[in-house]
Amino acid sequence: MYRLLSIELEKTWKNRASRILTLSYFVILSFIALIASIKFNIGSFELHFAQMGIFNFPFIWHFNTYIAAILKFFLAIVIVSMMANEYSYGTLKQNLIDGMSKKEFVLSKFLTVILFALTSTVFVFIMSLILGYSFSSYTELGIVFSDLEYLLAYFVKLVGFFSFCLFLGVLVKRSAFAIGFLFVWFLLEKIAYLTLKFDIFNRDPRVDQVYTFMPLESMSNIIVEPFTRLSAIKSLQSAVGENSIKDYSVHFSSIIIVLVWTAIFIFLSYEIIKKRDL
Image 1 (cartoon, rainbow, N blue to C red):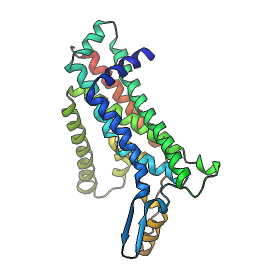
Image 2: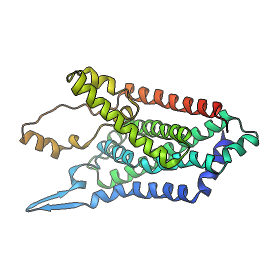
Image 3: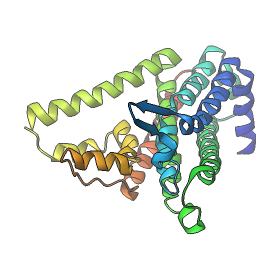
């Protein structure tokens, strides 16, 4: 496996665009720390994000993984380009001529997906520890290392999303079309949901239950938005008479759904490459 991974990393690093996008991703990811310095003055009211508790343990695990997941599209472009370049530069055919099997080829891509997701997760973990110990009001070990399931959810979310991007790269062959197809798929999921929910089944709640099994929606649901957990937002909701109860926890069922989609995408990628005339 080390040999397969080293081959893929060498290909990625030698590609200038992929190298720049990968480095830019981690640089921009570190900009989450700049949120701590943002202040808004509205009349006599001052809004300072760091003082709102967004970097308090254990909330920081939820907040940082949610924000970091938004930036995953940088690495998604790298994943799609990585596959598209195999067709453009003929390296896929050359790898097969050199003795690599199609199964090993797909495995090398999947190992790269896992490495990208793992590296990003470790990066977020270290950054969250630094920010947490710098700004958190609670630094007891029991509090610091609670809610770490958000890191697991973040890792699974990235692996699932990158596997989807890898599948699109295999299917479409061109990075621009693959990214476009990803956007089209997102729109199709939303349109299908709205059509079924409001036109066909007349707001039937079972539509929401089925919709959670869709690929992009299942990845989105694995980490729900953290903002309404903040005490300032809760106070504002109470002031306007809105006291909704929301479940912010990471559910094992959500992780399983994403892992199943991951397996499906990798299997389909292998089936396409196995049957395609290269």
